[in-house]
Image 1 (cartoon, rainbow, N blue to C red):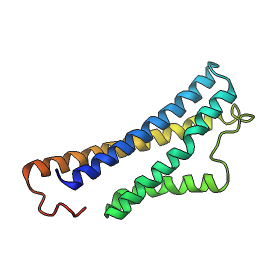
Image 2: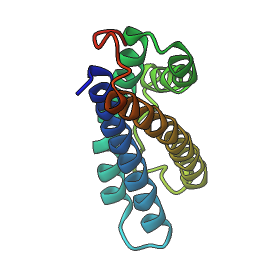
Image 3: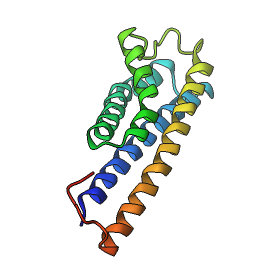
Length: 146
């Protein structure tokens, strides 16, 4: 099995984790909007997953940078920069007292991130399929090159 196939398999697993985390956060916000959970519970559930999501997105981009996939790296950099900006300003966590005031903005932000991750997932799956076909066809002359 070629290393490039394993790399894209790892990237798809990271991307699935990012999609699941963002979808869970969006569901918590929707439950809060429909009054199924209280603001403290929603905030604590969402805040638990914010930093791991930031770290996974950073790892995703670092792996793309290290392996030389420049275009995909450049597509992912704006979101990482935005995450770093939120983290540096200490605005990355949802405040319990202001959760209802910022509910629509937070939902739109999570929905946009979900769309971004789904587009990246499609790109990663396409690269995974191409790497798999090349590995099966034996066209992988240099298995160590990424």
